[in-house]
Length: 452
Image (cartoon, rainbow, N blue to C red; front, side):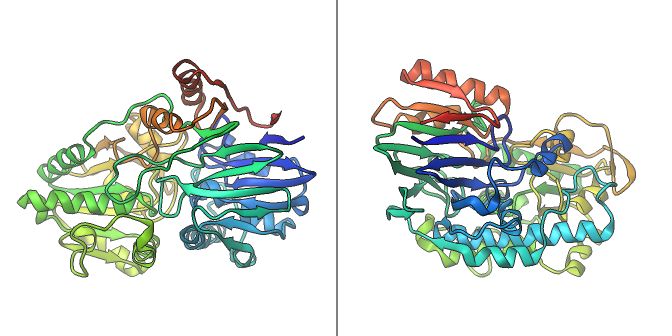
């Protein structure tokens, strides 16, 4: 008898943790931090259903913080088992966890814990990350591996970010699929998600379970850049360092190739984390499609690109005049260098801020894209005079049609559990699986357990 407990990413899009109990062994699929509003972040403080030392193993689908960010805390609390992931995910995870520990330490030292509503609390330090990474064991796609002596697992490409995979777990005569985060089809950098095959149960993300992405994100970005150029000020783009930044660089390079005015725009990448991820594309060439027009002088095909790594290099952007693009993390403006650029430009009527993706409730990105006319940042009130643009076409998450397209590759009629989505998104995906595919489907609820 096996049991599945939805510990996180059930009713929210963060904190992915699914606890599988098979043959008396406890195995987590993903182990992420909750992010967003205070009520959601405080879920990180809730005790787990089992002690950390009683967890036998962890299966990671990809390296985003909401899927790996809780790992150092679990290790700090006593976990010592293996952590499985694909080879690129290992390197992504290292970058993400190092950055997370650094940010938490920085916020702690500056005393922002109770002053900045978007700052995460201190859950672990760099030492905990250093203790975590030796536990990681990499497994390539399509290679079966044994977990805790109770199940066999296989990774398949999920097309979400570099190294992302969905996990097929086989135990007690069943095949259970955990989607992780599912990517999109026909993307310029990543391969399409692989087919599911047979399954008895599918635990499926539903981030965009109730929405359809626009068909032409490149044209939307082109229009936004053109309008920003006409306004005459900075064009600030909050972008996740992993995948979103690379997609945007490629898109900007494509636009520059056909628009002489945009080709003259200086482009500043202010994210040491994104630069490290850029290097991963060179390190794992088989994990992505060939990069068009890539060269040492035009990374991802972008002209006039300047990369800012050090703090001093970042501060130089405070003095740049005229139209220019600033790409910086984080993508939801929940921390990182992007906050400084927003502080400098949100009150400038010549400036443009482009949010190219999902904005979780409670984040600064959510507040700005939902019409805020004033905010407090670094303790100061800021009126919003900059143009705020929200693009959804660059999302790395499959929309409702793409989720359905992937689910249709299942050759059986499984039971579907919708996870990793706001209530309305998960509620929209479950009926699609039921009505269009004839499956049993339900919305996963945090803290509940089911018998598989």
